[in-house]
Image (cartoon, rainbow, N blue to C red; front, top):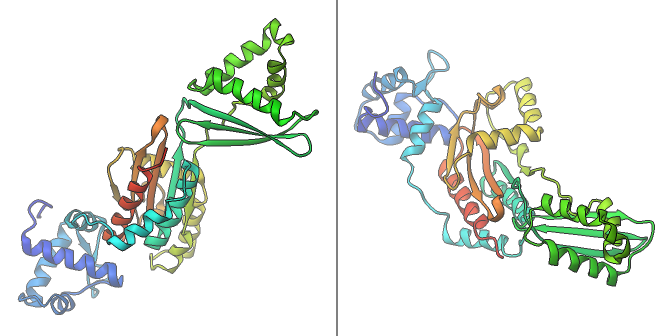
Length: 344
């Protein structure tokens, strides 16, 4: 039985031709049809013998005795390795760059990445921002709103922005809020968020704080959650409806299970964590049945991009095993470059 390394040139060509045809048509391919499509000098009988060997080696299978062959996940993995890495066409690449030109925060960039991946590949686009465990304070902004409300904005050096609107019993003028903002930024910019909040509490609890107008007002905002930031990952996913138009050989029950799985944020996170562990390297995984039985005919192509401050951005395309790999790989690499060029 031939191994992947032992496949001869003829077998490799035939295998790649079968995979390409299956990606385009979704139909099993017979030796006679393949001979006509490829204009091979080989006879259908010779091609049939090669296909039988590929079947024995686990690259192909016959859904029915009289049917042609369909490539397995092993065949797709071999086919992907044979693909040359190509960039997106220049005009298309420039359009992608333009889509990110006005996006200056990680939150917006993750959302835009998801949108553009879906548009470019017509599959399921996924993008996630995973905050660092020890976020560093960049700066605080405090804005007076109507009805005794205050908008508290906390920016961390991983380019995340956390907003919170709080209601106060007494209004604080904008001039006073500016003084509170300057106090926090002067004393705590560059600190770990948890350390800054702990130190601010220590100062508030000191006896002299009773005579310090700034600390008195900071006490009010502290109790309303000043310097508290959520550590929850931000996840965007679009294009799940694109799976409806594909022949995934799923029953209605399996398709329902798939969409339920895609609705679970934690499962999507587990999918990204499991398959996109290596930073900066394109990862391709064919057949995701180990994650969930309904994903056995799906593939994932993605990247993990380290960001300043310890944050991680993960982008991926989830689609059928018979997706256009060259197109999807080029799109993921292009969006990966866009996420590495976040402006200061």
